[in-house]
Amino acid sequence: MRLPVTADQLDAALQHAQDTGLAHLDFLQRLLADQAGLRRQRSVERRIKDAHFRGDLQPLGEFDWNFNPTISRVQIEDLAACDFIRRRQNVVFVGQSGLGKSRLMQNIGQAACMKGYRVLYTTSGLLLEDLTAALADQTIHERVRFYARPELLIIDEFGFDRIERSVCPQAASLWYKIIDARSQRASTALVTNIDFEAWADYLGDAPLAMALLDRVVDGATIVKLKGKSYRIHRGPDQPAAK
Image 1 (tube, one colour):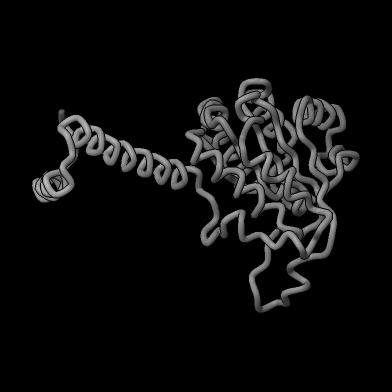
Image 2: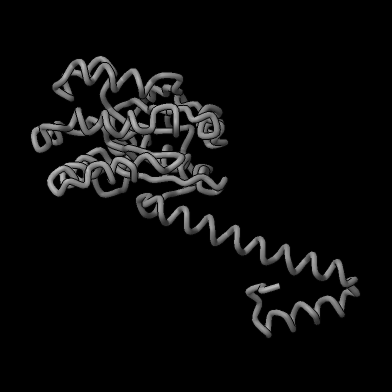
């Protein structure tokens, strides 16, 4: 049956079956179930590794919901059920820095990995840096296809600072390529600290910004987070959520 079971593991399983009086079919079912569980676990671990989340991410259950009661636990946990990915819909988190937007979105991404979805996490700056390099070496079409593949693409820190536009004059066009390639085909999750009406000014191209916004928010779940900053509350010497 080509099961990845060592001789010692098989001997232990046979001894357990003998000690507990398991029937042959029950023994086989247990052996197969154990191996299936291990394969699922390894598959989840691989998907989480391939997603490139930031390190030391705390579980969603440990989020301090009481610190900012305006953040809806029900809504976040509903998003973590990942039905929006099945429906190929987008999610946008909007709010000031320090509220935990990045952490919560990555928690949703982890939940998606556990449910079998392919996820990729990146920041706006890293994405534009990669695409700018692809323009230079004429591999832009390959990179667009790469970012179109994941069933959930999480783009963090959109609008985090304006250096992206100054370093990458083609930012608006590159953003549009990625969003358009994924539109109605896969889910994109965007984390930003700028309101929608400021996108044109941020991107420096009003028509492209409008086209980009239309594709991002069409059928999307928009979550506007408000409250106190964890970063200010915890002080400069303690880690804080974004």
